Length: 88
Image (cartoon, rainbow, N blue to C red; front, side, top):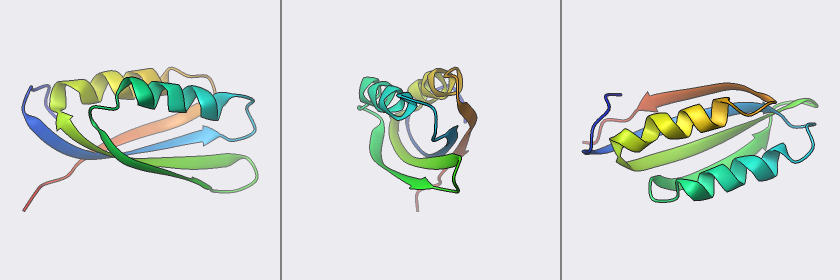
């Protein structure tokens, strides 16, 4: 995705250590900081150690990269992938 002020859409996946105390709460706080671009999210356990959060994004494209950077910088977050979605 390009850094732009245009309205863009994307799908973000965050894989993290679900046994790390308070990490889920930290991820939610970060999401609230970016609530203007987050349209929906859901969380699911992958196995005994890992969970995945799927986040649907729509809004100012220049905000997508800062969200990605905030999430990946958290201890216990193993990967953050951002994929653009093409509308119609």
